[in-house]
Length: 49
Picture 1 (cartoon, one colour):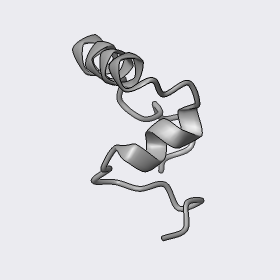
Picture 2 (tube, helix red, strand yellow):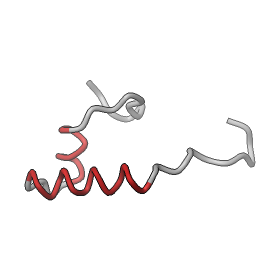
Picture 3 (cartoon, helix red, strand yellow):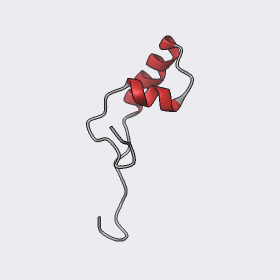
Picture 4 (cartoon, one colour):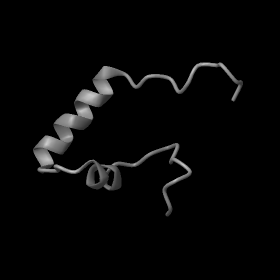
């Protein structure tokens, strides 16, 4: 990453809304639980699998 450059691109609001709706319908109240239930193409380096 270039110093002074922009960060990660913003996530589309439609995706965030769909994720919120999914969590609500599934009764998920924890962000960590939701993260475990959803696949991710670019897992963060901090997560271990």
